[in-house]
Length: 267
Ligand code: 9D3
Image 1 (cartoon, rainbow, N blue to C red):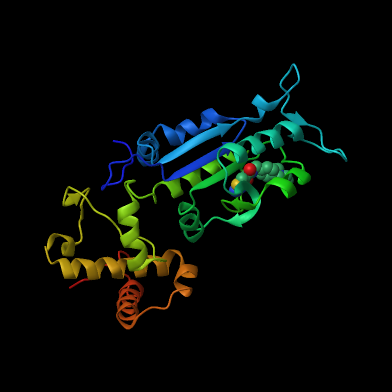
Image 2: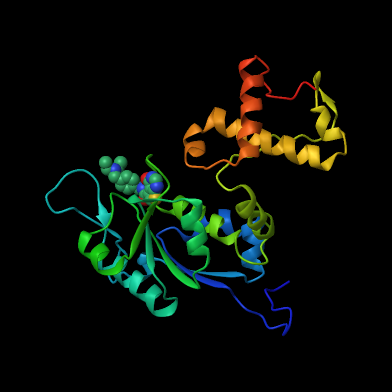
């Protein structure tokens, strides 16, 4: 089913993304599978690729070049890279965002801001990088996935796109995450259980079989607080807990320090 407005039935694409990359086929991981694949097929988001190799003018279609000053490694060749970015700006428009180890760390808040854009261009670097003058002239912002080394920007661009696409109205995930964001942002998830009730000698927590929805909600919130306290105390420090949340966390900590590893209520 195509993206459409309920009142008019008109087909609308919410977001147009230009991707500047030497390796468009890598994006099949994103376009061919799951929620992102479906959203792209339905036209919620349109992707267009701009390959610097298509903007070369030499016989060998050269896309790399040597760095002034010497040293190991190559850079992306200046003219084809800038031509591909300019073509993306002319046909797609929007800010040019480069995926780069020098970028601002990508967070859910930044993903949510990008998800509201109607157009954007993602620039994927390869080799040791891109001539600084091209970046100064054509790149608006830089985003990083974190302090570890990838071989290029493509996997980072796909991660960004996956996160942005699942927030588009009509994508599976958009509804659930909207609820989640207003309800309990900044906490890790609670544990999940599915059948059978006993697996390899270990039972599902009794509360989840009780049918008492208020008690289940309370247990899940307590687990989220407790898991965050145990695994990501840095996240908890940024939150201002309410009185009930504080009490739930204190109960979890008492039980945890008392040696109940699951942090599970014993009553
Ligand atoms: C090992 C090469 N480094 C020189 C000391 C510089 C370097 C160049 C190119 C490091 C990584 C890359 C390619 N990385 C990305 O394009 C990238 C990235 C990353 O490596 N980590 C986290 N987020 C991102 S976003 C893009």
